[in-house]
Amino acid sequence: MNETRPLCRFSLSKGSILDTLFINDQPRRPTYATTTEGSVTTLWCVNPRGKLLEVARIHWEGDSASAYHSTVVVNGQTMLVENVLQKSKGFFRSDSRTFAAGAIKCKWKRAKSPTSQNWTTSRTWTASAWMCYETSPPQPQQSPTASTPSSYASSQSAPPIAVFFPPQSGLVKSEVTIYPSASTIVDHIILTAILICAQKDEWRVAQSALSRTALEASLKAELRGTLPAYAPATSSRHRPSSSQLRRPHSANTVRPRRGPTPDPPPYTTMDDSNLRRC
Image (tube, rainbow, N blue to C red; front, side, top):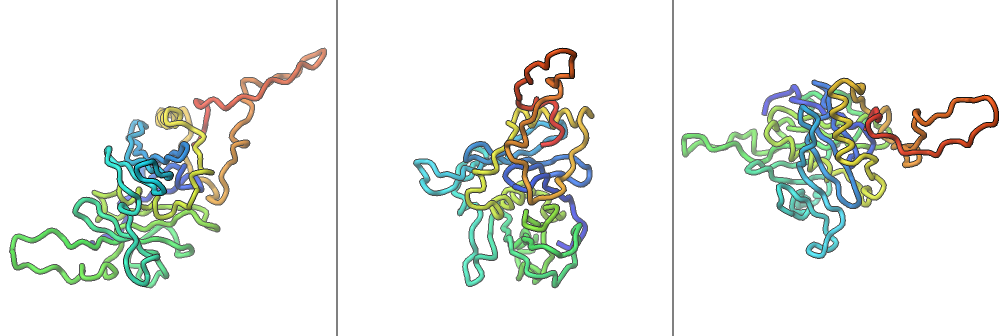
């Protein structure tokens, strides 16, 4: 729990966490991705070959078995969102969320100020953030009388295992920083980060332009070197509208000819193989 250098840092490529790439700074390639189709958001892990592997599915609208409740499906197991990420009890419960990653218990806590920065991020403290702490004690020692170290008595006495700057007004680049202590629960941190910052009904406007198949093909093309490397969006406040994602393909452009001007060609959806970014 004394590590201060990050294990990895993921920058979001778009302004909505429900339709974005989580781009690892080193090496610079997508490691996670989210796509939203209808009322279902899927969290994918991107393997080194560009293949998308499902981590979890979030159903924002409840079905007949869980009316009015959003659910999360992990490895075929369906859980209520409020059971995956629980609001802490107490007066300040709105500022913290708890979750379990196997035997490891963790808490996301909204950061108020950089009063104890004995850890590193890529930015100065200019935006609101969530900090994740491990709250479960370490595994029992060989000695049955060994006591729990005092550093675990309060999660605030130890550095965070993750720091999350969610999309927000005025923030150019959103990012998730993971520290070595969380190396075995990165999937849980990314999933719960999505649940923390997703706005009500955000899924209605965060529909993905690319299907899983098209996104996977684009990722594989980038790894082959036929597409330029991914780069984060210059601004997280603006997301292209559906009308901006539909333009005439260059192959259909009509060059000037002598004689009468022919009718203009019809507009067509962009060919997925020629997309230069997600």
